[in-house]
Image (tube, rainbow, N blue to C red):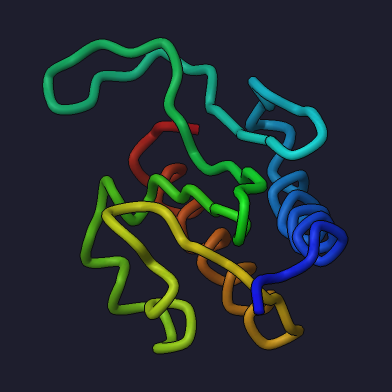
Length: 127
């Protein structure tokens, strides 16, 4: 049975709360009911291309899950080795985690992944 709209909203709010800890220095480009994402507004060069901003992460309520888009795992795929099996099983594609239910253990795993990604962005000079 898919999660109810209220369960999806609660999952979204919990994940959004984790992301908000990184603002500032990251800034939201979208902050509305059902969607929230964070960017670093900094002039950087990545793979020889100049950029004025870099996407970090975001959450969006979908029909049957909450999508957690997490760019550090896209830019640095070896980060997957840091993820526990429960979190890694939710990764669909290169950077989106499909989260249907969120318990304290999974929330802690997401929190650690965000911390590792933020450290990576700082190390790369993207924040």
